[in-house]
Image (cartoon, rainbow, N blue to C red; front, side, top):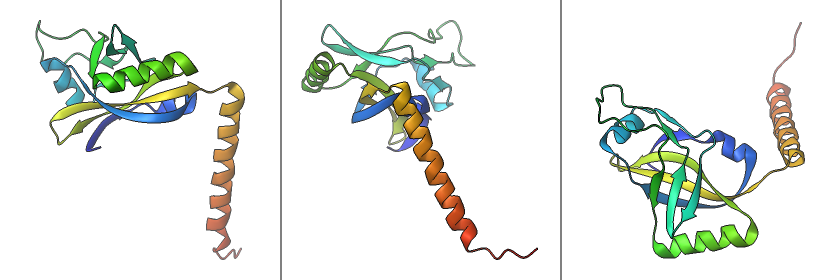
Length: 155
């Protein structure tokens, strides 16, 4: 990845990430300008295969500030660009195993092309989320105690 514009942090909390893919995205002129300005929101966005094509739904790209009546609709459906073979493979995994396709990040490749990192993911249960939080807290406590161990405590 070259220049990460925005990341979907919630996806890593809500899903187990199984496989990652890079795909292009079809945008209008004002959309790419808003993306370069960092005005992207991944809330509730997902991807799906519709009639042999991969589409990204509910990705909010804010209208361009200096745009006129040619401005885009913020949450329109956007086509993702992948090879036919990859799309068929993704679709078969989603149907067989009950997985979903979520966007992880949007970035600029070579400071020119907008790309979306998507992932095959399986939803986490509440129990899995609690385990992740407990594990993260344990790591934090361990690193904190190791950091404090070397200090000299004089009162």
